[in-house]
Length: 117
Image (cartoon, rainbow, N blue to C red; front, side):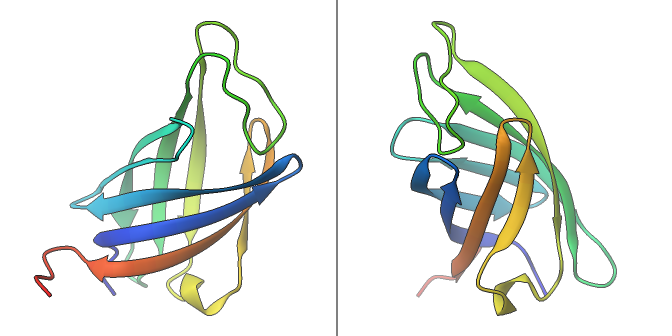
């Protein structure tokens, strides 16, 4: 399995729901959501096809996130360790623990990286 591609992420937390678009390519993850939250990180594909990585989440000034936290006047940044099983798409959602509280995530791969269709 290759993780490289374009993804939609559907998320829910204690304070609401949201979505984001992500690109996974050559060990790098980037993404954004409609409220201006930015995602930037790295990942490694393990021999069994699973993924391990680290994602930096940058919330803009005054932003309110689905976990219920509000960023201050200079915004907020935190890191989330990632661990996805190779069969992650077989599940309705997975729970991700963040410093601000849990997030339920449903990932949908939209297209392989480099796919020209």
